Image 1: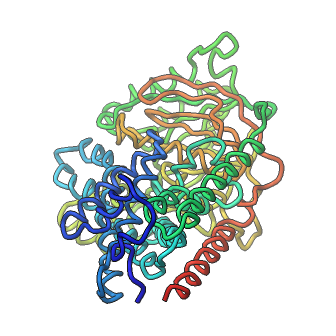
Image 2 (image 1 turned 180 degrees about the vertical axis):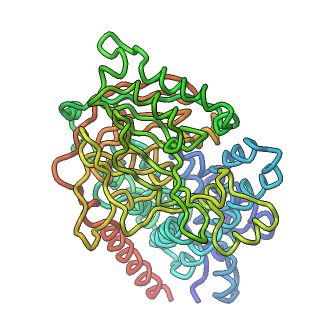
Length: 558
């Protein structure tokens, strides 16, 4: 078996404080090794929005490399090295996810009398479970590990694979995927139009981990070449982005004038039926509020947009509310709103509730409807195997809907048709964080129309003034770049925004502010992006190439 770097601290030519630090990290053991891994992961979370400290991820991944270097010393069996790396990976992932997702605890405080007991499960339990993906990623990296600089590629292979799996298995949760460290910045994020978030993740890991070779390498070439290649890669991303983003603003779609309503309703009061009148009053007042000399209200816009789950009641079954909306919206104006809706039960079955986007025109007349497909486990429904058990214990999902929401049909999901707008790729809440899932695929009736925008209605009031809503916007913004489509995002408490097809925010309302946002709709790019056509196939090719390189280096060092 090839010896580890920790076996030979004196062979590398590098000296100085950095080399000393690297070797101290390699030689840690027991609880100290786990503590270093947890702290390294937590440090890496600072690279995510809203902080965006990319050097924090550099330090974090360099520490990860040195920890794997020292995962087996002496003549320990290969199995022991892999298991030790898996434990390091779990600890690193636990630190990363806990530091990056702590704000999820805010949701448990909205109805603290009912959910406070479960707060540790969300803040600590969820990261502990999701960290198993990082355990698998580090273990794979250790299986491919070699003595030289190519071990950086092995780490990228393992972590990129675990991030892809985290985004797909068990309904998927690709929040704060490592590629967001670069995917939140305008020029580097343009690479997502070619190979998406996961391809950007592979590159991010390669770039951020490259300095790990500086303190420990057998040759000067082995020490500096990875850093030089990382610098070239980062420069290439910047150059590609600078060339792709036009110097001028995206042209507006003719005849479309949008008004996004951000009511800033607190979650604890928002879903109380007794507040229904005040809530509807607020929506209607904001919708018709004068915001500028040329935007005096509904009369001066074409589409008014309200956020996810706008009402604490079923709007379709409330004639009085519908009559008030009809009186406020004259002919030719469209209301697009999030709302819960219900389908009449079939004999012997309970009613089915959906988290939906409704379109309402004068009359009132209901137009096209979109039902949320990707529901939030435990938030909007209880997973099947646990449903009966948890309900027997009188535990429900966060959203107080009898039996929880029903998911929309994936097979029949389609692009929304809304008068006056290009075809709409509709998403609700965190559906916008899933790469490649924005535009539905072909159905037996044929491919859907090519969309002209992404519409995202959300309610981030559950999470207050925390990093959560800011991270949510950053991830939705990257979908615009991947698909080459403008994004229109209306959020109850913010951040509401209009983003062009290059990821540039053209208009926005800050978090925690009541108001309206009047904006034009930017045009989509001409044609479809490489990623929109091929999805994760380019990432798969790049990952396979990195895997072959790692295997080749492993064989040479065997």
